[in-house]
Length: 275
Image (cartoon, rainbow, N blue to C red):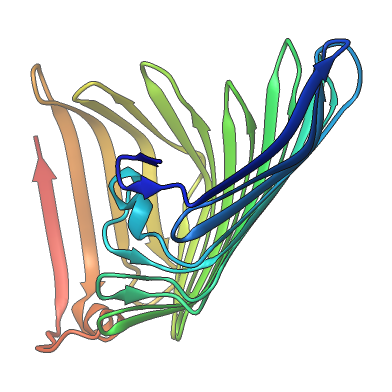
């Protein structure tokens, strides 16, 4: 049998239901690229313990469902769901062999997540680690990130290292009709240049074509010739705007080195945009 581009080559199942409990003794299905195994029990009134494992040798069958085009990789997904129906715990892990998407490639990518689901709330902690991202002339040595949150808000912290460039970010996100992003900390280091978010937090609010930026100021610690980027105000594509973007003494030579431009430029860049 098949579903769109997914063809089922094999299906074995041994499942029974008793006393509000689904008992899975055997469940195995195999497509051209994926082997899926499920075992354990799920109870509507007692303890549950369910294990899921999927091994895949490619992503071609699932390409039209993925947000990234031309993804080529293999690996394993493991997940465990356990606890009572009114207090379920989730633990999962994704391990990918060197993935490639278009001209971009990764040496290693791991994702681990834990969660807890109760009638009143859902909480989640996820950790991402990626190593050896190559995109044209730009290479990221490592990227690590952690997300903690619930249905109301998320907290993100991330570290990135790419040769002489490193950056650290801490941010809070409150999703909704108006999404609120709070930048609590942001540092960028490149060779002898060190940039930092000044007088945090900076706040970015996004709502259907409207953007409000408050207290965003990134500045370097160069006492002789400090550089800065400042933004504040609102952008409204359908209404009135009051927005100011200003940069001072941006070192174009350092930017050329950072992004490995084929035709490097030099000098100091000053810019003011007032809408």
